[in-house]
Image (cartoon, rainbow, N blue to C red; front, side, top):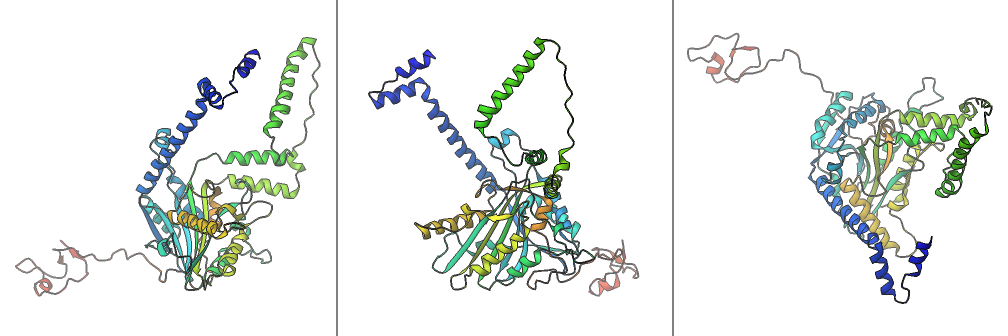
Length: 467
């Protein structure tokens, strides 16, 4: 300790400049140079990632399903499972030097003046994968490339004529706790236990939007291989062992747990020196799972069920905008957020607006702060930013995603939902195909080598042809 005292008393204290120079010259420069280098590297890496993200071409697809479809959320769950194959395991060099990032898919439900459309925005290289996965579950669906609707309003829109409310949803609880999923939407009073589509309430509200209003919902999903299951296993362990959600702080670990662990290790070394000590077998306690209440067992089963399926990193955004004379939060905000609340399970998890990303402010500089938040949430929505906003998002598995985004079943009667009007069928197996230069089998060729109908200038007939 003498060297520490010598250093302390050698610090010049009569001159602040001399004191600062003493700290810098005795190793304090590390606390300046290293953070500066780290900040510069982060700025450079962020720029590389932005350039890589902007170089990727995207397409926006409108999906229309037949009115008589009986496919439920299970079919969309399979679509999400297929998209998990797009995960790319970048190397450290590609990730932190070249700036490579994982591509995202945006599943959107929009009401443009009451006209509801289901949209999917995906990288162009994965368009065939998207279409194949949809046609595999919905053979009669219609998929059309459309223009991007987000340009209907500019980031610097005129606040005197328009108003905007937006938010980014977050989970109420930890990622390992699931939200209320489509399997829970069953009519318990019905003998057939008929499925009640939760999309009905949301589409009914979106269908009541006025012609000069818009409601946009964006579910941005990114394939991930993060070890999010570890959090679930840890939570299950704490619930079963009766530790609840308590986590030891660093103070408890440093001053209580660590000394006790050292004492235990020291006693194990000393006790054998005293001679043979009769070891008593510790009584085996029965499984603590049996001590859980029915509610705790339900929570444990729900967490384990979520961990059993593929997970995605998710961003969930909402925007409602309209002319000021039409803007009404009760219709475009409260009703939509209320419809999303049906996916909340009080003992598990739910979706709530994040205060940081909600266009709301109180007290001082209220209007300027609201305007800044409006531009930020609109910019994130238009860019489909997966790494901007409220953190890096949260984890939902494919069953939860299919609950939030799936095409309505036949029982949903929302009148303005765009659906396929006709049912497509495969062409007949023996459909004749015209081949230029071929001769009709029932006609003899003329001396010029053409058939009689060709010689007369008649159009070819779609009958079987032979060479």
